Image (cartoon, rainbow, N blue to C red; front, side, top):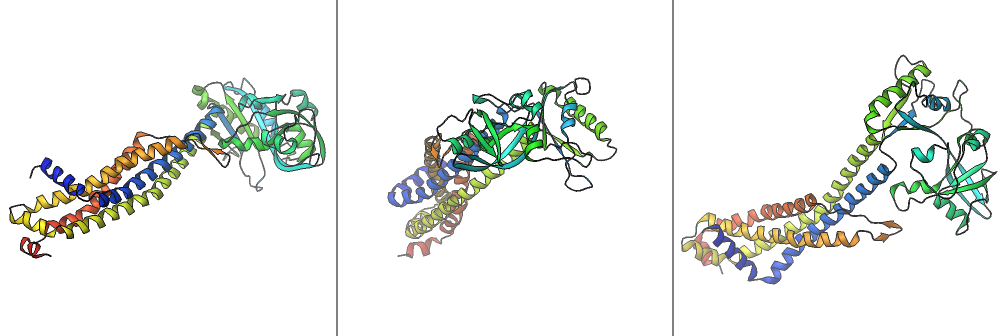
Length: 407
């Protein structure tokens, strides 16, 4: 028989038992829909995280200390950060914002919480693309005087003050009296929402008032120096200039006691990790596709048994081995591919419906891409073909005389 006749015969056979065909299709539909919807949610989360990090700026470098021979002693100092501002030794650097971190108990009236305290300088807002929703930010005078002022993340402000305006209110940080001068814009449900649970204070205030940290030489240490490069083309030059400056300051002759990473490297690492997670989600959802394939195999085995006499008659009338094989393989493939098409429609619909919905305070962001849909449909068709081969071969190998005797 020619391929067109085989296809028509397969469709006719499937249509003869509609309920069985629908039930067989259902397993594949659920599997494909699950793969597309879960992978689209994972891909959407990946894009959301990447876009949020990129919103902080792609021309950023992060300089962090490494451990020394003395143990986990910080080697990056406040003075190192100021040295990187030198336009002669580091002309590719446009701004520098050091950070000094600690944690503290915050008390406002009867409310209290535990949060991270980030010591920063006025340049922090421009370097890290932070904006103030209310009040002001830390000034150079605050840093110079080690003033006890604080800028609150939106979540901390809501926890401590509810719907009241905290600007100008008093706040106790580890028992010390601070004045709230500003509130940061909320990052909402984004992966950077952790910033909403921080408070920012002058870097000198963290050192002198909250958590003094010095190197073995007596210098003030910092955990990170955020460096803003003039433009993306100057990244390599900036890294070289920063490394040279710090090596000279630290008198390094061997391995560096600091590390320099770029925002692009952070984004790439995160994308690789997220891609693994997306594939893992798809693999879990793919188990339902495997179950659907087993269902198709079961249906095809039943079909072969029920149509044994039909197969015997067709063989007696001259049907060849390959004609019987191709017919049953075609039926299995039609089931799986048809289920794949309907499953793709359902999966895309579910993904579109979930996009922008909020669950548990987190907003879903989905991203349905062509490669996910095509991959799910191709796997569905391959599974149908794989699980349909054995029943088809069994049907094709039936002896015509024995098949005609079958009751």
